[in-house]
Length: 157
View (cartoon, rainbow, N blue to C red):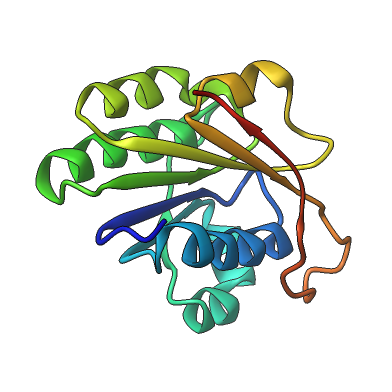
């Protein structure tokens, strides 16, 4: 399936860089190249991965607030704003975190298809069920690793 407007939002504090690279390849193959690529992360993560973010055309959204789930909240707020202003056909959220259930439901209410991408060993069945589709990628243990095939697919109809 190829769509015109695809927003890829990455919880970079939750998935590894090799999973992020796999997410970009998967999104391009299954949804079309994402027109919007954002990675939500700490300042330390943004500095550490700045070269890879540049190479992958990912805009880091640095979260200066310290506290539990502050990066998740930043991603959720942006997702709603993007849904209203940009009206993407599909959102792809790269995170193994179940905290995004409310924003996924709201995006779906706005007519968006929402796909989740996560990292093997970090994602539970309940997380997979909140999305329209969900893919799990292996973390290769090597932050310089390239893309590889997803481990499994869970789809919700």
